[in-house]
Amino acid sequence: MNNQDKLKEILHRIDRRGYPAYKETRGAYDFGTYILRIVHVQGDPFAAPSHLEIEVKPQTAGFPQETYRVKYRRTALEDALLRRFSRAAGSLSGRSGSGKSGMVSCMHCGQEILERSACTVGNDGSITVRFTVGFPARGRTIQSGPLIRLLFRELPDAVSQTLRSASFDKKKLDKVMDLADDRQYIHDQLKPLGLTAFLADGSILARASGISQKPMKGAVPMHAPESLAIELNLPHRGKVRGMGIRKGITLICGGGYHGKSTFLKALEQGIYPHIEGDGRELVVTEDTAVKLRAEDGRSICHTDISMFIGSLPDGRDTRSFSTADASGSTSQAASAAEAMEAGAHTFLIDEDTSATNFMVRDELMQRVIHRDQEPITPYIERIRQLYDRLGISTVIVAGSSGAFFHAADTVIQMDRYVPYDITEKAKAAAAEEKKPWIAEGPLNPPSFSRVPERRNDLRHKGRIKIRTNGLDGFSLNHDTVDLRNLEQLADSGQVTALGHMTAQLLEKEFDGKRTLQELLKAFEKRLSKEGFSAFCQEIPGDLAMPRMQEIYACLNRCRLLKIR
Image 1 (tube, rainbow, N blue to C red):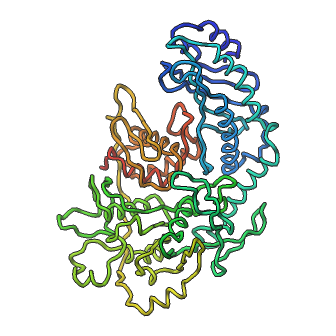
Image 2 (image 1 turned 45 degrees about the horizontal axis):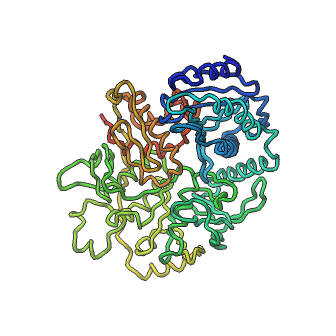
Image 3 (image 1 turned 90 degrees about the vertical axis):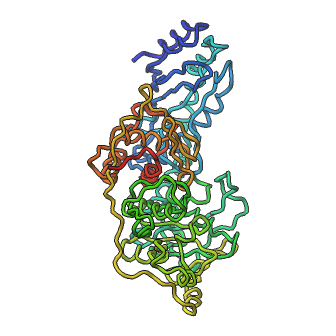
């Protein structure tokens, strides 16, 4: 490894030469308290900026082992460090020449605390941050001066001020760790208490706007009805009261604009930890929960949807159903079966984004269109069986149909953003109405026997080009994977990671022998052990780890997937 003087010598030597001479800087350099790695050098000042890494040595970082000894605490520490370094990097950024010259950028963090490649803490307490720098040029001529100033003066100061325990206010660090402990405690109590979710009193569920995940100012705080209240004794905050969403079937009802969907959205995002001040810090949902919705036009590849859709008029086999252009009901049936394959224990459903004929069939329709003429078994006829026989709970938002009152274990009314337990009232009203016809007899769970084949045709000129489009999806070369309807994705970095994972799985992991479920269970173990290096040889700084549920969902929407 070279020392920092070698880098300075190179930069002085190539000053005012053609831009390709910057390639000579690639390598690792010892700066004493940290190692600087120049991993990738842009070929042109107008190209994507260069990739750099800084590895702060353990003795310099100096964070106590208890801050990173367990994964959830390590992720919280990484998140806090990344936010500090990202702000510092942003303050160093400024155009100083052609194209992207002088631009310094590090991954932006939202409200969620995610495992991100931009900052990782090693088992020995070392800290690695990954970021990009636009190497300065005038036209296509190297301007070394600004880069020398950045790398040898400004960046060392930023590292010292953001990535060392000595520069991190102990009270603020304790607060980060305490919140991580308290949230994890709630998470660990869900199963023993028979809950799918917990929402602490005082939580702010409403968001500022459709384009901002920050809490809404003046929003009505969460307050649990007494009949659903749970009190937990958290490790640091002590006694905290809140609403427990019990396993089984929970119906969220109420008038329009009274907070039903807001409530469900908080549960959807409760699978992630949130930063202090978000309002949802102590809203925790069991981490396999999946939002189901209709997705007209999505592809389906050999999925067993027979649990919801039986014999079709054209004779296609619904035990291994494929289509390039699914209808709303078919897509929702497939999503339910695929979520089961991914190990989901809770389904979250909003009638506003569901296919009506997948959800219910009223009595009049059943009289006019005989059951023998309707291949769809609506969700209302499976909802009880899903829980009683398969242990899958459902939280469903309904504002226009009372059909689910009969099946629900708990009915919550949202009235001006305040939840009320109206289970007894709803059950009494439902008793006066004719009970919907409910399927009887055996429940045949979906088969998970799909065996994916390897793709050897993905590379174009020796590489696979992956391009991310925010939260909307990504493309592998010219094939687009549409993820717009995976509403629990929280960060574009997760989409970028899904792109890399999909390429890795299609090209290297799938073998035409093991089932998709077997393959992804093995992949999950590798992710747990190796992290981002399980699917990236050179780890970029723009990845965030998705759940296994989103990995399954992504593959199921990839038209490159081939099943034997």
